[in-house]
Length: 403
Image (tube, rainbow, N blue to C red; front, side, top):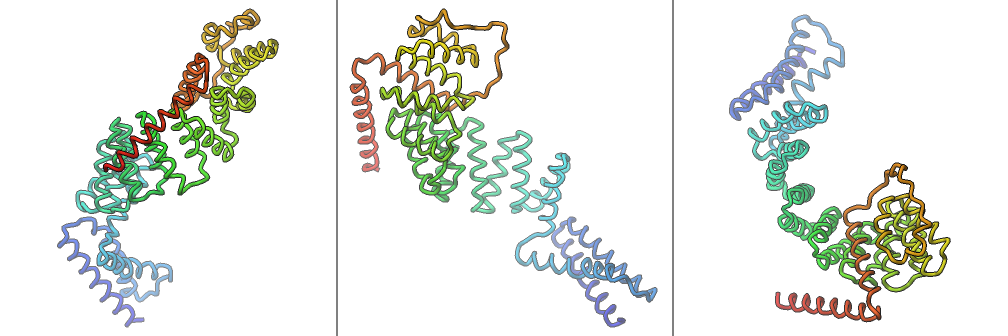
């Protein structure tokens, strides 16, 4: 026992001196906590030696951990360029942040990146903190520093693009996302965000290319097929749009706005029976239910089913009273307008709203249908669209050949 105590004290004291010298040479006061724990372990062992008492086994193990194993572990990790103290403080800062003490967490992280400019976790956690606080530009700066330290941090690439998009710097966001997808083509979030930005920028052809590429890695993804359908719709490429929407519906049949869009495309293609089927299926979707009833009323009156048209139209107005303004402009409803019951005292029900993309597509298809219905021959319209798409493809091909 005496030999063991002597060996322990000599080794512990040597490590204590070594850690103290390391703290002085690095001018890093963060080592004080480790040195204090070592001192505690040595003090406990010293008390055992002086009083000749055998300590409880749990306390004895703790003295070995504090005085021997912990400093050895730190020295080993330092040799591998892993700063355990930096890692510990970064974790403490993240815990403080989640506990609501943002000020203290930020101070710790600022201290870390000041003392350790190459601290990946310090910069990453600080970026997340700035982002939560709304300091987007400062967050971008910290994410960039994190990437400089760890090149394969794809999530930080994506975060930068997301923040740039939020700051309306869409071109820079697109550049960042294209770079990310060149490095990691299967990054799903990057494909979705890039496609969304391109659609918002009315670059529908580029958006289709992004979604088609992403589908190579996720061939059964609802969002990719649905967004691909949107891009094709905005290009007036209705056959491909219909194909994409149908695949989306097969994956997730509960997305009734897909059925509603398919119904609109069917109307444009003069496929009334198919449109009626899709509109009926769309009645189960809260976002599109009023519009589906409204369109079914149109189909019914064209078929001469006056009573059914009245029932559908009353239901549409009940669900969405603002459709009354649209009703007043529709000549097709003149024969049944007097049968429409509108309760002015009834409070308008709260409903889920269509998303921005869905509203864009809905409006585009309504405007397209209006144009088509004014033409004497629908075939003329579709021939015109095919020629337009063919011309666009030829331009793209020539551009690729030049490059």
